[in-house]
Length: 182
Image (cartoon, rainbow, N blue to C red; front, side):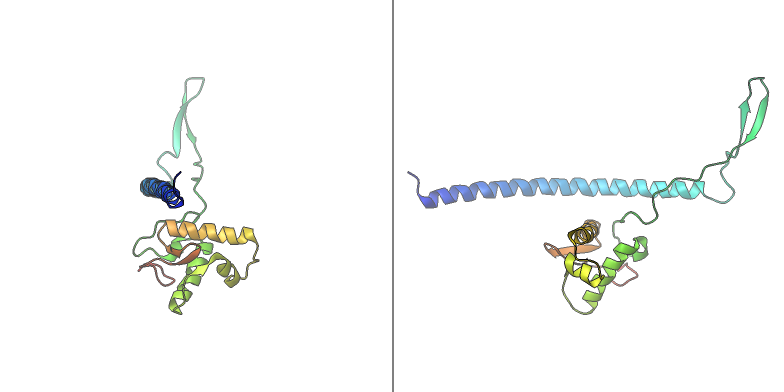
């Protein structure tokens, strides 16, 4: 019959192997996420450039087209270009890079960064989402706190914030002041 210590060691070894496997999987997923975010950023930039070209003054060169009518005569017809369809302004959280201003983010994200910047300026530690909700004067209901947590986690994923302890958020190294940047 195996000893109690021997059984504990077996369980510990199995748990350690599982943790190692999960860490490897998390590293692989993190690398895949970084690649996907870079691709997403490139497509976002491309969409913005196309939108800027299409909305340039003077319209597009294809304002008039020639169509063939059933009688065989070609007739020039004026075509109204439809406005480009774009995503809601500032609805996406850009990946932080040096010099990127906070104004690139929506008001909700700017408010989170401002609250954390005040904490840093006053020499206070990280904030939890419940504390943020209280600072913002929000109702302390789970839906509101979880919405803040989702936004804070998105800011962590994009490099604006760090999460030094689970559920506690602070500005990332290099992010400072309401103008963003470094």
